[in-house]
Image (cartoon, rainbow, N blue to C red; front, side):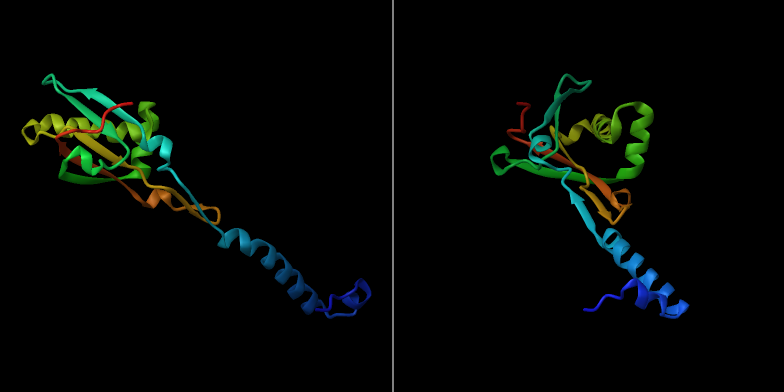
Length: 156
């Protein structure tokens, strides 16, 4: 590949010079825009978190960020989805974040239907994803899964 020296570049017509400059800028910027980022929000630390939430009827609800394993002997009762971006926005006003909003909504849902016997809730938060500098996580939904378990996951 032959690079033009300054003397050779000065003898190149203006249109070609501008085209070369545009090509150089585009070739430097394109890798930034084409890069895809994917950072794990569901990491091993958050997956080990299980919280106990007291219910009005004297029972407790365990809320975690990981699907229960087979030893828990769980049966899926219901699933719901929530726009993650909206949950985060509401969470900022409540000063608890999107995770707190999802947890509160799950507890309210269980209080309305105590007959279902739900004792474990899994909150699946979408992983952070971006295309270049554009965050696409906002377009993804968080999922709440409601379980009735013989041995629900416990706080550590």
